[in-house]
Length: 196
Image (cartoon, rainbow, N blue to C red; front, side):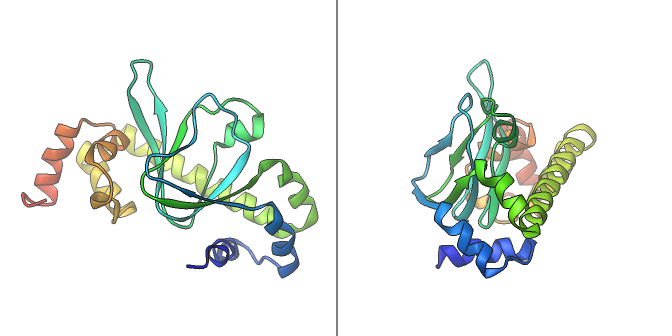
């Protein structure tokens, strides 16, 4: 897999990126292979980068005062991610980011965003569309938690993440859905059948 072409391809799905603009961004990009379980960003740390998952999978999660965890989101291949409030406001991140499998991740410094926006309109389009996607995802998740039953939320999860059901531990899915692992097990038997 050519990770640079994967990154560029994902950008070009969002906006038309001229070759000279890609050439400008490339020196700022750092590539990293993360082992399963590696914490890329800890809550309380300032996030200074925008990330791209070329392969693998990560999760964003909150820590509770009791020492528990609550999964906020999963990041799949070809996904962009960051702690946006931390990046923009220069405050500590409210959540952590961890690899759930061996993952190849690109990053570039958030400090160059304003310069990119001023250089070429393609970067403004990328920035706007990524923020729109994040906002829509957040709004849909909030709606699901407030208005839908656990069964409906699980069905929506299967539709949104059709491959994750067998790729990650069930307690992570339960945490994301806001239910207990026992409740998820009952739902799985009802929806997926007793053999899963």
